[in-house]
Image 1 (cartoon, one colour):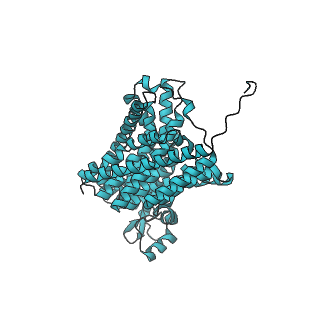
Image 2: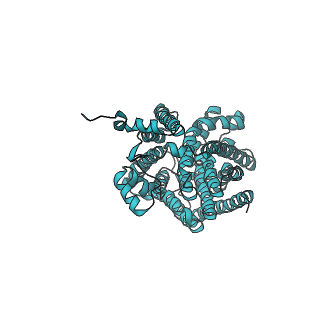
Image 3: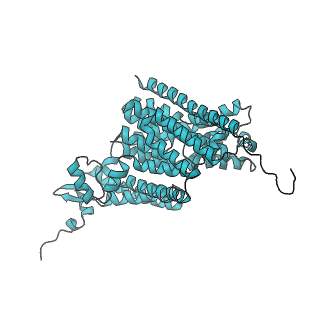
Length: 49
Length: 401
């Protein structure tokens, strides 16, 4: 395989793996947020609720 | 009184005089370069954490050449070429830095320790603001890591050497060291030195690239702080464990780096404070110190006289420049995709020189608009940059080893 083809292969594979990682992160984040929604932020003193 | 030959007493001078002219000149140049590194490190022009020990090591090793036996010249610092068991055991008892080189440097442990320390100072929560955007920027910021490879092959580097040289574009010192140790052990010293030298200069050079490529109006775009999610420590630990397992599963060859980085992140979020202090302090700074010192000591005249070193200097700067340009192009792509609400200057932070490039981005944005805060987004892109660099390094190593 020539150097340029190898570069394209490395680029393609790294894009796939990186997007897979980003997808997994997003998926888990959404799942966690669905299962355990974050507690609402406490209101500032003196400003009421 | 027996006749005394002064040169046999002052062997550093004797070996300098007796050496071939090219070696003699190279030794003198490297001694002066070492002094310059110390000076620039002390002044803060170059990174003092690396440059001060590197400069002292470089100066000392090139001054302290002596006759080891008969006419054989060498030093009593370390011998990077010793590989036979008996020879290595002998060297371990003679050369004072040999144990550190053999047991931490040549097997990549020191790079992993630095990575562990980087993990401890990294907040993975920034990456969760927008993982796809951050990863997109980080991928664009690998332009130099990718394009330098065929260019280096075209001028005569082997595939393995070209991959090691191209990794300079990732702007990640431990990653360059790790890759070059595996792929190009005859060139790893100059490659790593060039990488660290240029990384010290990125803080000075990248701001000009940002100003050149991003007009002031766009540099001043304010980011919406409401986008920053509040992420608990337990969530960060969950992400770190899952991503680490996934990456180790996909690319076992870089598992030591992945594990070290994510272990640092988990310790930061969940570990006892003494662990955080230990890894973020003595481990990180101890490993950085010995990394700099060993790089300096490895900078002997014979190693640096390799004709490929000049090419390394050219390709190193080319790789970093291409990565910088790629990162900003990535920033523009996300700017367009987000309906022109994203600050394209964040693109420079996709280069994984964490946290330097994120700081560069924030500094340049602040200069354009003093109310604009982009550091969380920039840190997210930088963390993704570390991950994409490790992925590319692992692919190169897996394919070419």
